[in-house]
Amino acid sequence: MEAKQYISVIKRRLWVIILFVLISCLTTAFISKYVIKPVYQASAELIVNKASQYAGSEQLNFDSIRTNIQLIETYKQILKSRAVMDEVIKKHPNLNLTVKELNEEVNVSSIKETQVMTISMRDKDYEHAAAVVNAVADMFRSKILTIMNVDNVTILNEAQEQFVDPIPVSPNLKRNLLGSLMISLLIAVGMVIMIEFLDDTIKSEEDITSYLGIVTLGSVSEVKRRDMNKQETPASKQVKGGEASYAAAKS
Image (cartoon, rainbow, N blue to C red; front, side, top):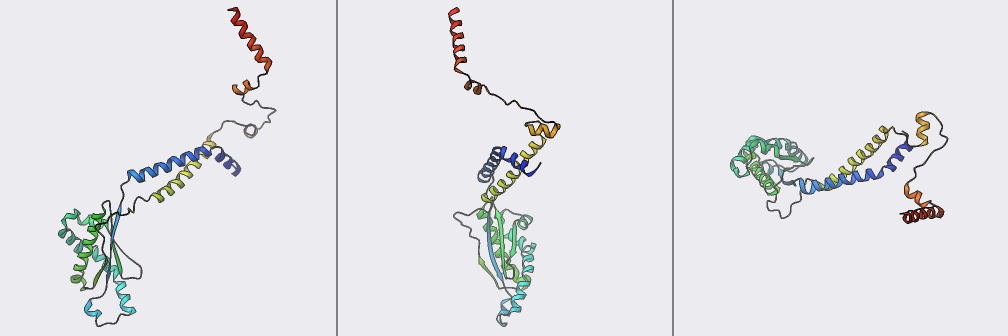
């Protein structure tokens, strides 16, 4: 098929494409809004420096900041270790999590070239996620002193446990609709082109010439009954009327 033929097929079956895309987007919107349960994210930010006993005797310079930044990866591994997570579970049994679940659900990240660490967690219950994040942050601040002799940990932002109207991070309605629009459009276009490609029936004079290699001398178009009624002459209507009256008189 040439490009013109593809365009012609799409134009001829455009209503099918529009209908398919519309149904797909409406279904996606319904599922995102009423079926999928929203997921919320709570996060807390920490900043970790060298031990305070050294901070007082050392000027803040590029090298010390660089050293603290390089230690961030170490701090992240310590935060996810059993030395911290076990203590969180023991101190907060009301969280109803195992150490494995806590490790899987809590995420630790850092902003590049900074000393700031972010502890985050996603959950269907925002208050539960906030409680877990704050518990992990507090336990890390208390345990890092004995592990690495660091007592200069500051919690920049705690997760707000009493949030009036938290905004879910998932599902993202706009992103889901956009994805549904693009995917359904590709499927619909591919479907109508495939149907046209598999359809080997002859529909026009060009098809006869293309498939059979012969030239058509003429064609008979389809005539519908309503078109025949419109083309009836007054004389034919009078004859029909006379026949009807004759039949009535004879009976």
